[in-house]
Image (cartoon, rainbow over the protein chains, first blue to last red):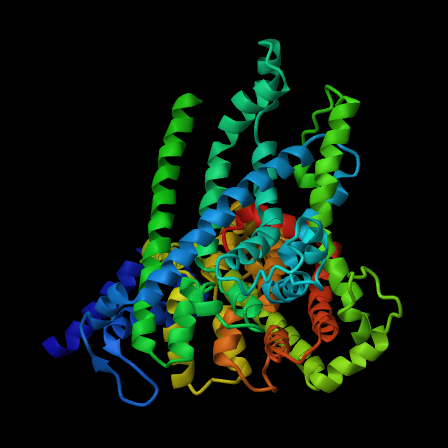
Length: 319
Length: 288
């Protein structure tokens, strides 16, 4: 009796959990059925890899031998690996090079393109074109543009004696063109977000500032900039996260000379982990690198979410 | 086309002429830098090899040889058209797949109560915080274990599930008043019919915005295909270009021709559907 009644109660419990009336139960079943394909797919193709990322990072994994548990060895190796330190430094340098310039330029362009100028839609389109281009094609084109002597940049820089500069070979310079391509491709994207932010500033604020005698600069300084600060913050965070992931530009732009840059000078974290895994078959070690990258980006994301929550309160109080 | 960003034009005061000149000077200089690489790409693609290493650099080919360069590209990379086709297959597959799985799921989350709804949705959103690079290696291992390396399955199937699309489409569905759907439900339509005949048609702008962004991302994807596919049968065009670039003998005119062929479809799509691209980014352009 007991063995028979138990499944029945379990089934009954499950049914009750779905809803108290037949109608709500049926709706619950429909809901579960609708979300099932995407949820199961996400779990299988993204959820499981996230869990595997942790387990692989504490193993020695290569193509030949079966995986072996090695504890935190991979992370210890990271700390003492100069190549890893270089990749991390290069990534941070790229962020420092690209993000401020990208955000300032995008802000400037958005503010100008928000003015009632003739032909501004055409200009907006021009600024947005690089966003829809593949990073691979863009990097190939820029490699050609940056050739010493035969590229346009060389031609333009010839008068100042930089016509023969090997932008993609010089270890001290190579991050500049990589940052340049990233900026070129993201400027239009940031511009859109800034334009949306600019459009959401209430016009009355400008009226009030004008009545108080604020000039054009005063209105920009005391109305636009403060009202735009949440947008600016979002753009900065997205740019930082994106810069942490830079890979295509490095892969393509150094492919014809020395992959990863002369003595690793262009190697970013993502490129470093790609090479460790897929050229050297050090999957365990590469997974440890991936976790560090994940932790860095997660830190930025959590920071963003925390600050954003604060901002919401701030705005609510102000309003 | 930029209507949604044009709502409020500051027409109450006109800009003085010197300020206008100043703005145009800056904007045009910037726009030139934005557009110049495309012009350089098109111009180099039509240059004969002898003009490539001419000093000083010529901006336009003196003897354009577009057709010959195109033929030369196909003799250097005989499967290039196949790569373009593969990219198209992968792009269409992923986009249609996401439209199906994600609109079903978004509808489920937006309109139905069931146990675990909050938790499952939160877990899906948590996936948004994981950068793809962080799971590149386990993803590769999973695909290898499934025996999917060098197959379209690897390139398409994982890409048909998306937390980002789920999030965006759920937002769009939540904006539709439930009364409209309820009328159909009273008429006896089941949820799938309501979704197909009522909800989806009302969400066309959001679906289109989401679709163009997905198309763009899928067509331009590089790192994932680089890892899971390396045979001519399933190679996508970004990898095809990378191979040309890696072959140091490939002259720049052929490289530019290849890049041109890979870029034009997205440029045309963008120029035709500009407002959806903009809407897609403004909607929540968090993903890159």
